[in-house]
Image (cartoon, rainbow, N blue to C red; front, side, top):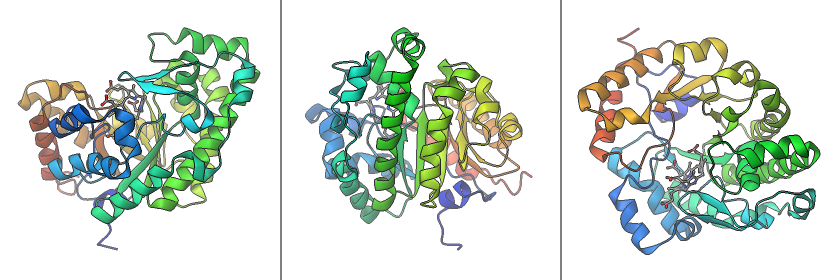
Length: 341
Ligand code: CP3
């Protein structure tokens, strides 16, 4: 049991002596070695070639020695086989956004092995290359629907929020298909070797609790219940979701990843019984080193008294200097949680 990597111990609920650390978007444009590959390959080319996807996944593992790798893909990866044309500029752009019931009905629900066979290959390569635990992931159904209906990132997501009101039955039909595809896709990741699964609900916070209860929660629960049967740790990320905590609590998940707007101590009270992951504001990595390290200590102190996985409150930004990231990793490693109790 003592050989079990720190990350897998913490994510299964153990109050470990040191907090494991990884970063959302640890692979990507803040890394010079990633930008170098981007001179030759587009995002989809990197993601769809198992050897390249494996290489990019391992870049931050090699550079920083983080405690977990996260698969290099995007939340949009499983959607093209449904019949959706997606480009990255750099955020996802949908060629023909879903705005009618007929478009929802025309979407395919592909068989598991049609969804993204290159992902299974990439996962196997990564597992062969490293003993660092590998996190797989997908988008939560409502967050996937946000992009499919809106068509791209947006300030207020008016088209999307309007669609939920003007044709709720079509929205539910879309969410049902996205849930089924997500379950197949994530099951495939676990069977290929992913050791934990994070569900990214990046746009959950747009909604009031009643809308979340109707359009998000039941679909997340279906995904988590399907994963529960596979005995894999399930992590839920809901950005900007303090107002939703009472509705999120009780979903069948093992860990919750939260942003910097709420202290981890409060998260533990409001969403009991799950591991907490987070929650340094990535903007501190753009500030002076001493203030950054002070904030790392604050997050680590807030995380005492239960299992804690150190992470950012949201993804790494392109402007972040890798030297700052390394300083965070070193600081987390030096923080002895058993001495601080
Ligand atoms: O290192 C990792 O975290 C794994 C890789 C990863 C990517 N996307 C690669 C990527 C992960 C976990 C994601 C998830 C994702 N994608 C989310 C959920 C997380 C979150 O941030 O809330 C969302 C909402 C998306 C949609 C998406 N894809 C956006 C908004 C963007 C633009 C991001 C940016 O940096 O401007 C993308 C493109 C994308 N996904 C890139 C990468 C590395 C940049 C592509 C490039 O290099 O040009």
